Length: 145
Image 1 (tube, one colour):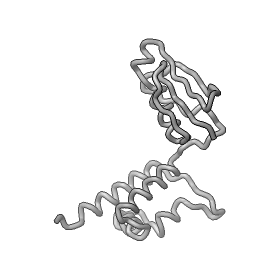
Image 2: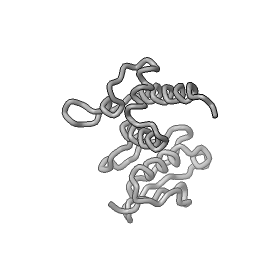
Image 3: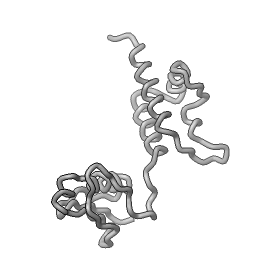
């Protein structure tokens, strides 16, 4: 995989080998109101190949134009969130308990996004909000030092 470069007009916004970082930069640049109003453009390159060029639209972020790359979705958000929460000392058992106390019957947070065929299911935005609210509620229940 080559290096991705995202330009807003002629200003480099991002140079990376990470498709997810390139997607975030593209989405942000493609909704830039200032450049849209003056008729500028956003361009994406992979290596020396132009992947896409378009005019930004205010408040409308456009999806990554190269369908060959994995598109970041809520599965990726879920996995990233679980890594951060685990780093903060909240393992699957703690998160599962928090969700159950919050009111969402859960056997395992990690297993809740796995299907019977061994693949990953896509969690909903509502599940992410409930997980975050459950963690927040647990934090509020802890005695303050």
